[in-house]
Amino acid sequence: MIQIYPLGEQAVVLQLGKGVSTDLHEKVTVYQEAIFTADFPWVKELIPAYDSITVFYDLGLLRSLLSAPSIFDWVSAELKKIELVIPLKKLPSSIHTIPVCYDTSLARDIETVAALNKVTVHKLIDLHASETYTIYMLGFLPGFPYMGTVPQQIQTPRKPNPEALVPKGSVGIAGAQTGIYPIDSPGGWQIIGRTPIPIFNLSAENPCLFTAGDRVQFEPISLRKFADLYREGTV
Amino acid sequence: MSITVVQDRLGSTIQDMGRFGWQRFGINPSGAMDTTALQMANALLGNKLDEAVIESIFPAPTLYFSEPVFIALSGADFGASINNTIIPTNHPIFIPAHTTLCFTKKIKGNFLYLAVQGGFLLNEWLGSYSTNVKVGAGGLTGGYLRKGDMLYVRENRKIQMQEEVIVMPWGAATHDFYSTPIYFTASPESSTTNWWNNQHFTISHNSDRMGYRLQGGDFSAADSAEMISSAVTFGTIQLPPNKQPIVLMADHQTTGGYPRIGTVCGSSLPSLVQQNFTTAFLMEEIAIEIAEEKWLQQQRDLLILQQACTFRIQEHF
Image (cartoon, rainbow over all chains, first blue to last red; front, top):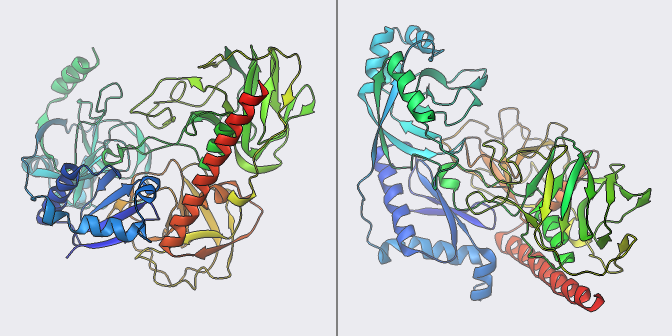
């Protein structure tokens, strides 16, 4: 049962369930795709999250077209009935292989995280790289992917005091989530590696490598390989 | 023609109504803090309402105009001055060639907007001229305006050459846009209005383009446990662990995990943005339908202003 509530007078939140799960997220992805397919002229944009989709709409346009007393009520009704109008179907998702160097020189917190979880660094790398992660949503920074689910044995809460600067490309863990910093930024995630691949490129038509719903696999690489790939990317 | 930044003060950027369509990628919209003032400054000059402008905090930059142009100032009053003569806000102003404009005193409000007739020549990023300082894109250089920066004006209309600054006799009435109480609509994470009713709030100095921290009210009974991240917007009121509400502003992140206890109405945001930090104000919850109508009425008023000013300018020249 979809719940819809307002986020101010120019957006609504479609609550498709509660919690973090790949099943629920698949529902989010499919529903989002249906809204894109419907191509409503009054939809400004969408933000999918773990269990919801927020839809921003053009209030001025709708008021000029409708005599409905409440635009919120009208929008809610339109979005609720979308599954009657657009067949909900799952699209194949992209899978990205992201090279990561887990060397301590690029992974300031890897030894701490290993010790906290009572595993060796080697085991931590194996576990982190063994999982195929789902990107639940992008947020916090342009192009920053919130990915799940980190293997139980190495789930670690974020740091109580964030670092002033986490370098671009840093791969981190926060609880059951793993993520990659697209630009230099302050941040509190536990940094266990770094990718030489730019996941945010200002001059590209779409600056962000990732889209919510994509999947990611990490491929461990050596420091030497990191340097080679990094250099390739900057030439 | 160009406008040169003679003296910079960190805190001036180019902004328009914001960058939309990319929030699902985590690209926050940026855009003007006070969208009424942005639109008003443009309306006064007969510009498109969403033309990019200079947004500035105090102290604002000193600017040199090499050629004649019409400008308009709106939003905050920072004591704009040319040759020791005060220039008013909310009127179209004719600026002759070789003029220096400076700002002398923070009189009222927090964000000033300066529009030029015809708009600026700028680089777009993802469909908008708004500056995203975090990634260094949009605006003039992707960052704050600095000493020596030159802004080029897009259009060079044939205007009568005058030697003196001329303040056009017509202007914009702004009081309907900046009143209090500050209205907001409820969200499911708020369960009572007791926290808000008849409570006076002030804006803490620990506030900026990302968010305004409010002081006041009593939210000790509210649940501030972090939740699964979901989308937020300009005006979302969050409750962090210290139980003092934050209103997310133009540079807000696209998603957040703090409980959302309300959303400031679009029609009240300009007023909240410009409240002096020493002034206490009330906040009041209203129904969605009323919030819709208040915003729509403001938009109608801005369009009427734009039409009236375009007519007056054409008549005058």
